[in-house]
Length: 208
Length: 208
Image 1 (cartoon, rainbow over the protein chains, first blue to last red):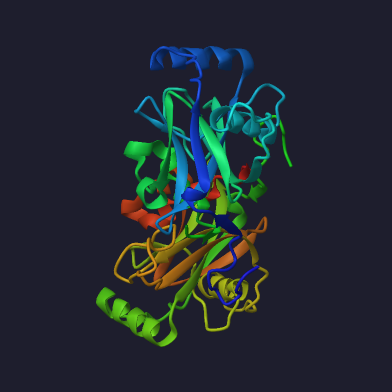
Image 2: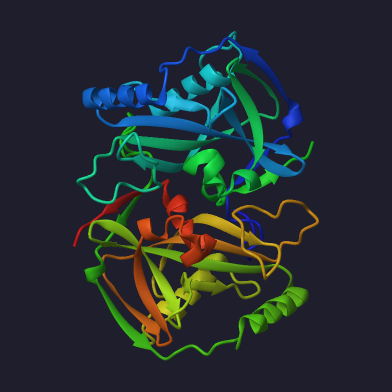
C-alpha cells in the first residue's frame, strides 16, 4: 500500500472522524468492586491464586478535533484515566470480551451486546509481574518473575457517527495524542505510550 | 493465531536467536558527511529546500542474551546511539533502501548488496517538523508546521546465524529492551520507544 518512494504511505490507513459526528449521553453507574486500592490489589491477588494470569483487553478509539487525532479516555470519579475495556471471562475470546466491555462502558443500554464494534489490530501488550507495580511493554525480565497480568490494546475502528452512553460516575474525554504522549505522570505508562503504539498507522484525519 | 483465551497468543510470533550464534567483525570506516552538528543541520536544511521531505528507514534487529530480547544498536565514536539505516535515495523503495543501508552498515564487504535481509513490518513512523527539534510519533500538530523528516522503523527478521561487519568508527552493541525502555536521555526518543513499538509481537526467545 501507499507510496513506495517513502511518502506518508506504508502504514495502514485508519480513518479518523470528527468528534462532532458523535453523540454523548449517560447511563446508570456501574457498582465499584472495591472500596480502596488496597482492596483491589487484594482481590486481584486472590483471583490470581485461583485462576492464574489475568488478561485484560482495552480499546483505543480515535476522533478528530482541531485537525489532530484524539483518543477517547474514561475519567473515573474526576480522578484517574483509563481506556474502555476490562478483564476477560474464563474461556472468552479477546474479541468477544472487548465487545462486551465496550458495550458495557460506552453503549446505550438499549443496544444489544454485540453492538457492531469493529475490533482491529492488537497494537500492544503490557505485562505486570505484580499487581502493585507498573506494567511494562515486554515480558518480565526473567522466568522467575511470575506473569500476573497481561493487558492487550486493540485499535477500534469507529463508524462515521454513533451514540455513546457512559456510566454516570465516569466522564468520556477526547484527549489529543500530543497531550498523552510521554505524559506518564498524568495518564500512566500504557495510555502515555499510545502514540508510539499507533505510530505505524497512517491516520486519515477527516476534519469536522 | 494463538490462544483465544488470552494467553501469550494474538501477537505475531517473532523468533529471537541467541547472540552467540552471530559473528562480528569490522570493516573500513564510512566517511562522515559533516564535521559538526551545525554542519549537519545546515546540510539537511539545504537538502529539504531542494528535495522536500527527507525519508529515512531504520531496522530493528533482535537477539537473545540471558533470556531477554536485546536490540542491536550502533554506537558512533563512543558517543551517541543509532539504529542501522539511513536516508532513502529519490525513487528508492523503503525495502530496497533499508536493504542497501543494512548491508552498508552491517554486512561483510564481500556480500552482494541484496544480502537476503528479511525486512518485516513497519513498526512505527516518527516525524520532525524541524531538523533541530526532536521527532514525534505522530504528524506535526497542525498543517502550518512543515513535515521535514519522516523516519520509518521496520522489524528485521534475523536468520539463526550470520556474520556482521561494522565500520571501524562504530560499535555494534546488543542492548536489552528493559535498558532502552523509557530511557530517552541516553538513547533518544525513537530508540527508547522501541519496546512500545514491539509490544504487539510475541517474542519467541530461543536461549543460547
